[in-house]
Length: 169
Image 1 (cartoon, rainbow, N blue to C red):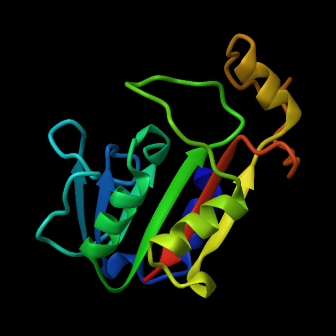
Image 2: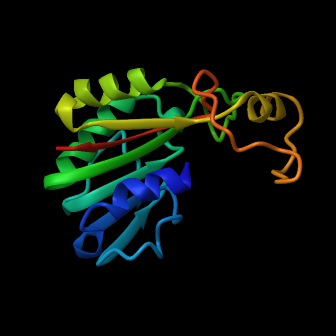
């Protein structure tokens, strides 16, 4: 997932961007002009938006935990600069993980139309996913750390572990 989402951004002028990451810091050293991060509970994306605007907002493994994802997505849109991007990733075939709650799963198609319903033009939304049977089985039983000698990174499209989208307003 991280390699594929990075490829999506590498094709864009990201070194010129102000970026905001919601509840994370994975992208801190990616090379943005400015990088900011906000986290729950200090900031609740479902309740309001920040007064600032950003060229890119990133939410990795956040939206499955939200009671009001449509509100949150509309708040994201209100914080994007004209032509700005939203990078979102969510789990799909992953067991429930209540940190603090777990609410929603989307396929690629579901995520695309969720973003469209929130206000992103359909033609500006790119989606992707990755997963395979071995990964799903490992997650649903007892999690076993990735071992390249044993575990395959081959993608099986019918068994998505993670789903992501890049949308432009």
